[in-house]
Image 1 (cartoon, helix red, strand yellow):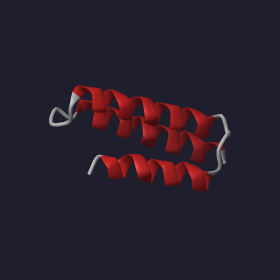
Image 2 (tube, one colour):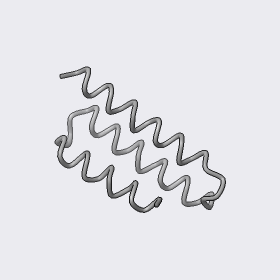
Image 3 (cartoon, rainbow, N blue to C red):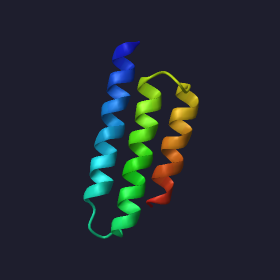
Image 4 (tube, one colour):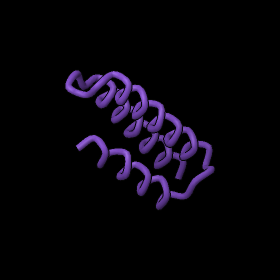
Length: 66
């Protein structure tokens, strides 16, 4: 089970880096998304939120970037 948490944490971190690195997105928006993803990944790793909520929030954040 811990391997799943670690894997999802790494995926969220990679997404944060990818979005933060996009130059076509305004700087303030990149910083906001990076903070949101890091906060979400942190809550997930600390087991403060359920898997369903984690995935729902991740989809919500990602949909803003489309």
